[in-house]
Image 1 (cartoon, chains in turn yellow, green):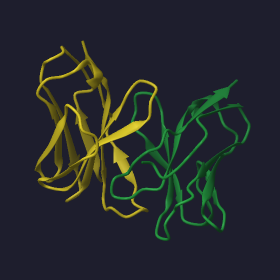
Image 2 (cartoon, each protein chain N blue to C red):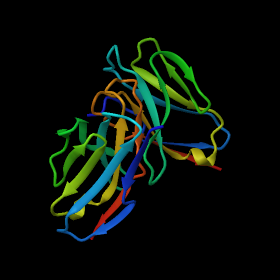
Image 3 (tube, each protein chain N blue to C red):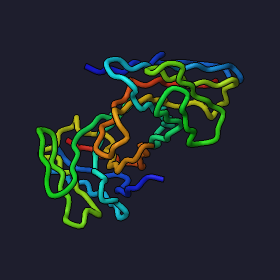
Length: 114
Length: 107
């Protein structure tokens, strides 16, 4: 069966420090991958999505970047964190782009920038 | 932008049936309607999906009228553990979520 792993679960980082969040999917090939951020009490904001290796689309201009070095690995990065980068980060995958395809989410990373 | 509109919040009581309506006026012919549930500090999880008429599973029912411009998620006999945010989604390749409906179940 397919599983999605996301780590770390929590992270406290100082302003100006770099960030690397990793997400991996097991049990499937060529998944579509997504990064979301959720600020406290707010909805899910799509940050990046990827339909294949080195095929990444950015939805919101910001202080973050994403990479997909392997088929089932999706990494969210920042060179210098801002206070406004704090939030709950979620990685997700889906098998296809079709409307009836379910999205599966990781456990999330709670990032606090201090 | 999200393709759906939902009430921001709803309150109900344990044991009641809860209906959450979602508007998707610009739904395309090939689009499905999917509902997700999210608890605090967790990722959303799939509840139910439909294309037209009525779909029922062990958790909920989904009613979709003939014009498909709206849908209603029905949760029978809710409990305190159903307190969560519920998202109605008409996805494309981007999977963009709307603001969702914050459902609060009272004892």
